[in-house]
Structure formats: C-alpha cells, structure tokens
Length: 127
Image (tube, rainbow, N blue to C red):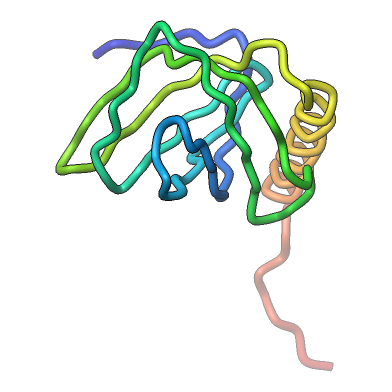
C-alpha cells in the first residue's frame, strides 16, 4: 500500500471547472488545497503535462466566488471514459482568494471535528 505524504491538507469540495483549452464541456472539482486541485471530466480529454492551463473554478458553496487559477497538470488518469487530472496551482490572479477560501475550509473542518467530539446524552427524559 502506497502512503502519500502531502504538504498541504486537501478539502473535498463540489464544484465546476471550466477550461476551454481542455474541453468545451465543464468538468468537476473533486478536491482542493492551497497548492493544487483534482478535477475530472466525464469525457476523454487530451492533457499535455508540459502545458499551463487557466481554470475557472466555481464551488457549490460559492464561498470563494469564482477562482481563476493558472495550473499545470501533474498526473492524468483515464477510467471508463472519464479523465481525472491532478493540477498544481501556479502563480494565479486569484491566489489570495484561494488562500482565504482554504482558510474558510480549514475553520469549517475544525468546527466539524469539535461537534463530533462533544458528548451528547442519548437518553430521553420526560418530565
């Protein structure tokens, strides 16, 4: 079993990605970190690892608004006609917005773990 060490925590998000250089159809954002994201297209996509791509990401929570990120593919995997791409975020017009969005996700994850750790009495009492 291969265990990957990551320098930056990834957050599962739902959203859309538009990159006309990759496909005229929108793709999906699967997760995001401060320095990368994983996207997928439900169709085969021709990806060149040496190229830089401009991605427009819109998450379903709309907390970040739209993010314009310049990315370079690190890996590509095709499975049953779908294309999964791991992207490295390079210098980007919305780097600061991405940083703020990741901070929001980190705070939300912290609140989730706090509520999971609370002890709740599961017995009903009738007065």
